[in-house]
Image (cartoon, rainbow, N blue to C red; front, side, top):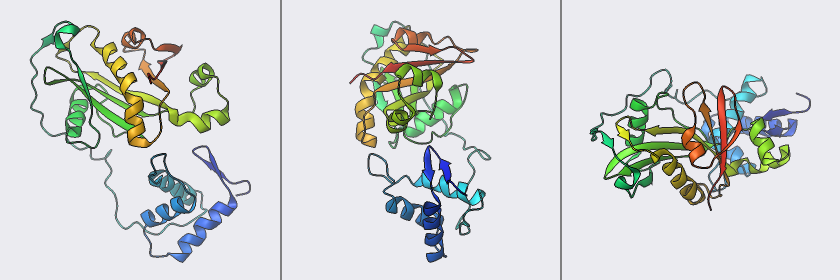
Length: 267
């Protein structure tokens, strides 16, 4: 290793690797979790809300070990592989009576943030059963929402950290690589959007996108300690047209196998 190793946009020097090697040597019986948190504290590696970037640091340690630069202690326990044995969502008991009416007939529509709440299993179950991609656990910063109307769940949305580099988006915003590195956390990606199959309410989808744009910045500030300024999404052009995003005044950035839309968050 001459110039260092790059991980998630950050360059780690020989001195950084040497620090990790010394830390491992000084604590030969320590767990990987302990080492990761010690590194985060030593480097002041934390999120805007003060939480340590523990998962990111563990990924770095695995990368360094794969490169032959460090040797981690043996795992204290083997974590279950959620992909090898996907969890079965709990049985759902919800009203599936067809809901076919105008948007004004079900107002007010309530958008609830459900991550780390008793309603999170409802979100997981609905996504697992009714979204064509199923449920997958988001990584990085993320929030989950369930929309209710007349006391019934009608839709689910997930918002997650934005991808590192999207050419059409970066050209649309007009930022440099340095600006992107500094401000990428100010963008959030709509990774899941589900209208439940028995719900037929025109304009509901674009209405929910509008509610999300107005609510997300404050929720993100409360949860992660920093604001949001842009929302983005990708639409599979072989399955969908993205009409609801257009109706919600999102801007089309690029057309390919996946259509890319962006909009500004409403502050």
